[in-house]
Image (cartoon, rainbow, N blue to C red; front, side, top):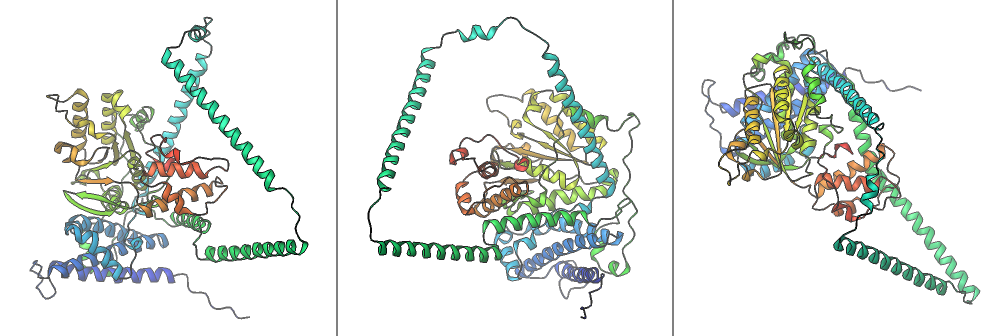
Length: 602
């Protein structure tokens, strides 16, 4: 039997290269139309296009830049050459700068409504215009440095746990022969406490009594219903046959519908299996491919240099190794000190591309618009942090923009910050309320030393609203002065990026605080579609860990049960409700949940 010939192995590579060349040519022509006009001379930089035509060209350029970015990433995964890596770096930088300088300067209604109509009219979906960070933009030197930090942090945690266990074992030898607990038990209760205890016991007794009465009534009703009554044999056979045929017919129709819906991915089980398969496929794709980032990037080929597109970014230099400070024998001393003090944030368990995103209110230099939050973080924070691995510290003239996140408790602010740190392979330091209260001066000095030593550092500060001035007080408190000095010192360090978080709205903060953060975002409670995806994501993770003994019949019921709650509480409810067979958690858990800001630990 003759087998059909297999396609050549280079077919996929050749197809992706052709797509890249077509996109580069199209983007170059669109930039010429955008800046000069169709028939204007090259020396004239005045746009003569109408407003609607210019808007459409901006949309087309933005969509083509996204396609170019994704195609270049796919090309690097197929063939990890230095030319493909250069194309990925240039496309990522151009996409980020175009989003900041051109796309976001359009009117708000055009970004929110007209852009959706535009990409839908071009047969595109929301996933086609969404952007996520890729690790292939980061140099291998930065990745190995980050992995080394993770090993150092693991050893520090083991040493810290050993010390705590050793101290606990030492306190067990202290024997106190005086029994103070016995003296406390003999103390008399107050009248109010005694009345409360009696009321609780009385209510418990009444509840048990009602339960026993209802059980007795149900047992008597079952006995009366189960009494034998004489009936004609023919009528009994007819009833038995009718019920049996109806039972088998309903069973056959239900199985047929389940098979059909499983094929169409319209049942909870099939949807959960599909989500698990997609996550496994993405993990395999992230492992395959890669480039040797330690080598010097070669010049791009001649046919790429002919276009005007690649003139916007210089050639990225060779990534240098981490220089050792002359005053330190071990460069990890400051990082170890930060680990022992507990300010180094743990690694996020959920990647940035796997987090459930929705449209949020975003601001860039007082320009407000609704945009997909993951794409906003990728274009404004992740891409600049990733491209910084190819630059020398002295060459970074413009510091990275700081980000301010506002949202209710459990809205996922810490989760997004940790996901950004994992996507960029950057050292993440988290300053929480407890850290600010205990040893803040020493901790701030450690963070500043670490920021000067590291080429990239992500600092997340919780409760930035403590800088808000109290109208009753004339000046600032000592805590506020320390934090203000700390932020001003970090602003002078170009390699440090700050993500601040607050529970109050942006309008309630002082202008002196908001002016430090050109990037701002307000996180809201998940909408209906986001809650549905969040429930499916939690169920699929329980399925992968063999912690889902029972699959819910309808996910829409879970979506309704988690209405008007935050991301953390919704994820906590789904995980607790469907993680064990005997767990009978009801809706009261939504009102008694603890603070759960990072649902990545589920």
